Amino acid sequence: MENFLNVLTELSGGFVTSVLLFFFTLLLSLPLGLIISFCTMSKFKPLSALSKIVVWVLRGTPLMLQVFAIFYLPGLLNLFVWPQMNTGWEWFDTTFSTRFIAALAAFAINYAAYFSEIFRGGIQSISQGQYEAGQVLGMTKSEIFFKIILLQVVKRIIPPMSNEIITLIKDTSLANTIVVCELIFEAKEFMLEGLIWPLFAAGAFYLIFVGVLTVLFNKAEKKLDYFKA
Amino acid sequence: MKKIISLLMAILMIATLSLTLTSCSYKDDVRSVKEAGKLVVGVTIYKPMDYIDDETGEWTGFDAELAKMFAKELGVNCQLVIIDWNNKVAELNSKQIDLIWNGMTADEKLGKQIDFSVSYAKNAQVAVVKKNSTLTKDGIKNATVAVENGSAGETVARTDIGATKLVERSDGQVGALSEVLAGTADVAIIDITMAQSVVGKEDYSDLMILEGVSYGDEIFAVGLRKDSNLKAKLDAFLKAKYADGTITDLAAKYEVGINEDALK
Image (tube, rainbow over the protein chains, first blue to last red):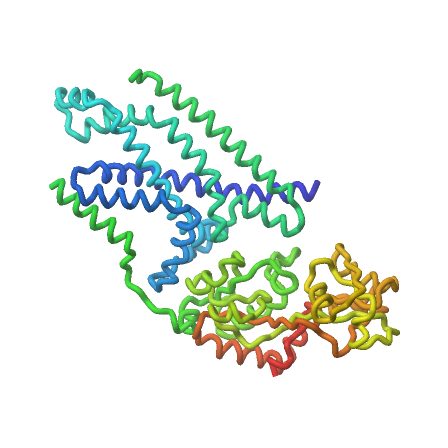
């Protein structure tokens, strides 16, 4: 029993790291994805070509490799070394370690690339009539986008976005390539002691988290039901 | 206006991608360690070299204690970080860690990528017999040999010794020892680290390590970046700590076989 509680405590610690990585990745990759989607749709050819190449590279190579590259390459090429947090607050310093920040950077950029394509699909699916209606009402371009287009886009992209977001929480385990002590890392530590079941217990953590996410997405979809586009 | 903004964004993206940050060189490891105020040592959980003490929650072990002493000598803090053993060379060369100090076997292949300190410890296979045994090195070949299934001891018994009568235990090296104790085998071939920690004590007090017999020498060394100027300091440190008896005491405490020839 004591053993069981000990395992759960360790796993919870790892889960907190996974969830933090998840939330911060979303926080950064959603706006970044929107910016990339604008670049891809830009009428200025060099910019859209460049951002298409960026998206191709980010979607075309394994995330694990990107995490590895972002963490090790700067040092290997003598550019810079990821700095260590040093606030003196131990929990903060260990949780937001150099490794965590590097993993977060890799995740944010990678997911922004996927999100940008979803955004682009959503934005381009809104009919021209919506823009024209805005113009008739004398709205500026940015007013049209934020007041008319964006919410309709949000409703349309919820199903593909929920797919990506659910994948994200499970992808956080890739951060253990560079020894970010997330859920799977902690579970695997027990295998050194000969315990295998913590790995399956870790699975339950993901399952519950995804369950909560699914309920939230369903609610969000219902709330946005008034757009009968 | 819009085109200018687009152009600026394009430039910004290229700039971030190509990482055109000012590059600085870190060949002078001694200086960079002192500037950072800490010596970062890459380890894994590996008893008795590096592990976390259950009671204090602090890093301890043969290698960990030595690493802390070395950092103290440099006048910096010692930070032990757990690394993925497969990524050890990347960790070292990307300056995430300054040393690999984790009972690492120094072999030729790895030596092409990184430098090694003077070897401070060794692992080898030794023969364990009963105290009243008259077995000699040449006699092992024809004796009944107990080994752990799949261990380095088994390889040694089959290839180096060419033993024909093998007892393979699947319950660890201790199982091989119990064969000898029970008299069902004449000799056990096990790790020297393991042998030194249990043979001659408690349940195994009737056993001894056969003098002058060892096989398949592996040497342990600390890993450094190629051409690091930390090597001279580290080698001098290890030799000094051997000369004043510190390493010998630690070896007794953690039951590690030290590489006396290299440290002299």
